[in-house]
Image 1 (tube, rainbow, N blue to C red):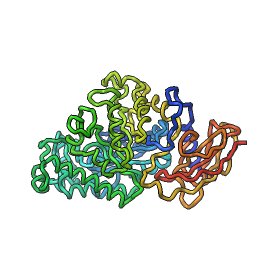
Image 2 (cartoon, one colour):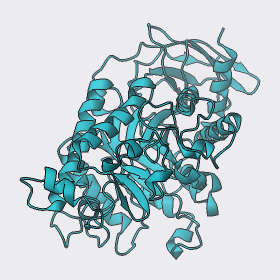
Image 3 (cartoon, one colour):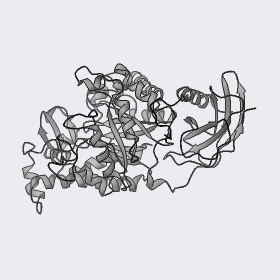
Image 4 (cartoon, rainbow, N blue to C red):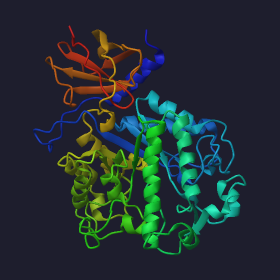
Length: 507
């Protein structure tokens, strides 16, 4: 018999996976994708999302995290991006950097449990993928090194850090610093069962000499024509070396970055976008377009935090620009969506339209290079000001979706075909008993339902639920009825799928 945990997991996600008709605006020939990134960022820096404030007990922190997972399920998401290294600190017992102050209020203080271990396990129980979100260079949100924990690397190696704008940063131009930052992040990768390693959009904090790395440039900058080119090369090295090290340590893990949405403006570079905003290439020394073209990332998730038609950065112009950049590269393209702007009275009138974010996802449909979206941030998905989030979910997430499958992993060993052992009508719907086969327990089961027999399972037209996998799972479809045909597909951790089970008809 299935465990009680498995039964409850299945029922919980089943409740969130009910199918509704496609909205009126949907194209009549629109085919919902089988796989689509549906993620949200859970930020920890200055306690933006989790924990909601420092000093909560371990049990309070755990309860808050579980509530975020419940929200993800209710919004029909399949992935969370959790910030576990916000300021050169750690949400796990790291041998490299101290415990984060955002856990207890005191940097270096043990929170009494392993937040990362807990978060990964609970995320997977719900059938969600866990992307570990890191800030690569930020050391502190304040500029006094003496306020760092005595064991902090910035105290042990004061030559590694530089102040700027009231904060402290690791100096990216020092090779030992670059390796140390990689080591600190890879510690989480190698010790925990994470699904992705994720950088945010912060690299060099400025394009001026106010970030005083002149001595470092004098030591290491030979052969570079100027400071900016050298800085850009330092960031390139961080990105390309991280790719190599992630592939060596855990090739099944997705590696990607969510940069600022503008690479360069067309006025600065003919390859740039039709925009007139801050340029990551120049201001942050982040050659985001180059990383995609050189194949250094599994995915890129540009933060396109502008409304459709917005000057000087128009969402409807940036979407095709990024689609063109990603096209044919093998780098997946996901879009960072500004949930935090929708319904904020301080924002422009366009952000007071409950349909603005839904319109973004509608526009995305015309660009097949786009494989989904990540929402910033979790608080705003919960608040759902003016109903903007529920509108987007209703319009675009009618069917469940599996997480994306990285192209480089598509040819790997696929899960074994599962079996639907029983299908029967019960009070409240149709109950299925699913049985996994083969050595490995599937991460998920994808369940398809149709009034007739079907033989195609490469889209979501008949997908009615995605539920956590186990050896034996009992699941009830509240909308099932006599005569329906059911099929089950086993899904592994990287989203490879098995052949479908034999169909079972409800008698």
